Image (cartoon, rainbow, N blue to C red; front, side, top):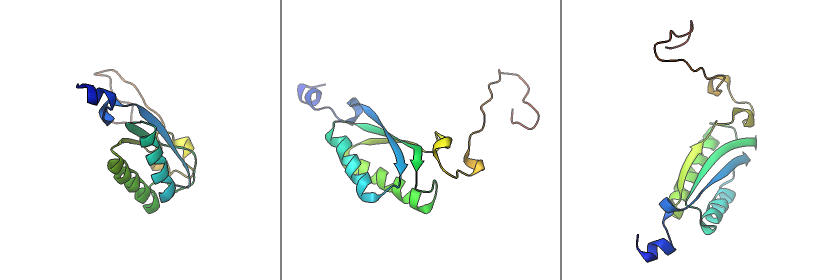
Length: 118
């Protein structure tokens, strides 16, 4: 790494911040917050659903806002990871088919419980 790059590293060498996606997701506010992450020196963010989310999860509006996040982050030179649905209790009215109910650890060669994939 040269001295110039060391003094002003690219996104790959910068920190990652958690961005809690809650309340009503609005385009102007999304852009403002992404620009503030860039101005603060972050190189990447993890967008995570959280308690208080008022934009319906997986709706057309939700998908538009996620698309905006990805496009604006790209413009700002930020990397993005999305953890939508990571915290199901933070998503109001989450349909049961999207909820994680339980994880089961089983050893190699163990038979699967009836009704569960092996």
